[in-house]
Length: 406
Image 1 (cartoon, rainbow, N blue to C red):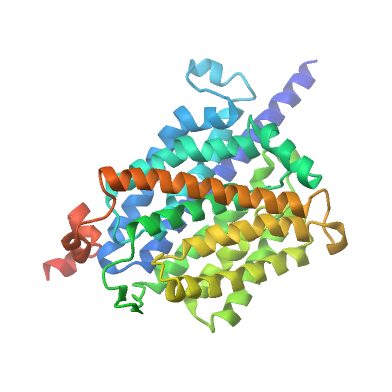
Image 2 (cartoon, helix red, strand yellow; image 1 turned 90 degrees about the horizontal axis):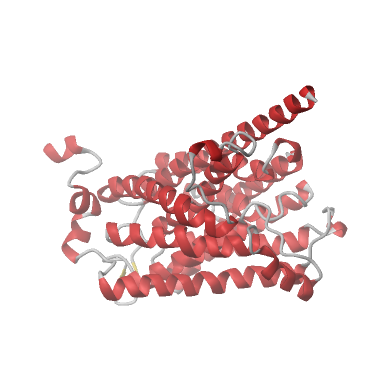
């Protein structure tokens, strides 16, 4: 009996350590979000990008701990600390940490779309609403305590539940489509489109952009692999599928983007976003194909968004996270099938329906929140502040203070 108790304790401790390491890897991805934005925006907005991501993370931690996680999973931490350790050395706590890293991706994704012209505090409030209320509600319907309500509907329609192993739809699609609403409400940056003509604004720092992509890509293996939840369910297939989708994205972007470094480094992310949903059920060659297709979607989708639709989405987060996240959900219903080398157990109809439901949910949430904030406190910087840059207007210091002195 004592040895059984010891083994159970060791298993619980191993699972806590496993998920904690995954949480730290996904936490590190937020540095990737920050540097990807820093490298893409102009020098006068680099400080703002760094402060925004860290502030959003901190606010997200508090609201998800108190409100969001209980909504999603029905587990409250408002009890004595001794009680929090009762279940497997505090597994629920580290599970919260891991899933917080997913939830906090929502404001991080939005940040890249609205860069260079959004007010600071209204966006922090918007992020808190999404992480504390709207995202956990959808999360509860797919992964959490209310999953049976929506999943039974998907099963009755398509013959299988909606499958999203690591969040192509629940995280990335939701974040990207909400970001689209924010960009639409804000409008384009000053000088981006003049008399109907596009005037592209160059990025400020390719090395920082590349660094952001690398940090995100490395952390993504925690995002996908550690979605197993415990050591017993870890899957080498998830790891290799993530790798294959990433390199597929890079190589496709190299061709479609004609060697452009911005497209190449975002291509890696396109592949990783797309493979999240079906990374546990696809064949590695299927994952490679999914990543390639995702990259083509991003390159041509970004160009169409910017030049034809004239949507000033600074980092292209709508095509990258929104559209490709939706593609990832649908792709799981295609490349997860046995006739394409997958494990099976998924339905194309269910995957399509679930992906469309996420788009509808995100659009409604985004337009409601940003519409209210726009009509009340306002969400856009004054023209003079935008012209001077968010760094000086909001934070009173630039990214390179020595240059300012000179």
